[in-house]
Image (tube, rainbow, N blue to C red):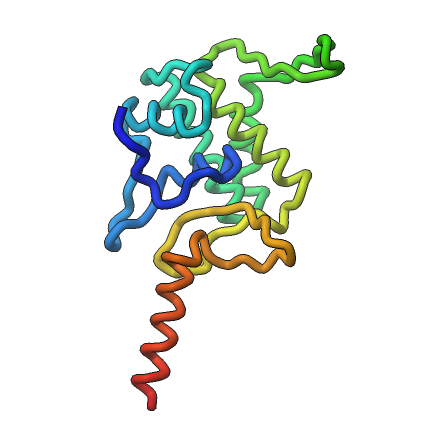
Length: 178
C-alpha cells in the first residue's frame, strides 16, 4: 500500500471522503481512481479490517462522495436525496453489552459500508454543529474541514499552506500598489 498523498487528513469521515479530491499545482487530484486509492482511504480511517477495497465498494464510496459534495457545497436540498439514497443501504441496530447501551451499523451489502458510514457521519456533523462544516476560503482549494477552533473562525484548510498563500498574495498586492 502506498502512502496517503492528500494534503489534509484526519477530518471527520464525511469530510475526509470529500478530501479525496484536492488541488496540486492547479490540477485536480483524485485518490479514488481505483481500489489502491480506496485502500489508502480505508486505512487512513481505520476501516481496512472491516471492508474490502473492491470495485463495488469503490463505486458506492464514489456515489457517497458525490452526494456529500452536493449537500456540502450547495444548498442542502440539492444533495439531501442522494445522501438519503446512500443511507437507505444500512441501518443502526441498538445493542446492549457489558459496557451499556450501544449501536452497531448493519448493511445488507457490506460494499455499502464505507459509503454509509460517511453519510451517517455527515448527519452527525449536521446535528452537532452545521455551521462548523467549512470549505477552505482559498479560491484555488477544494478541501473541507470541521472547524474546531474555539471561536469558530477558521478559514483555511491549513494555515501553513492556504492561509500562508493568501497572506503572501495580500502582501504582494500591497507592495505592488505602493
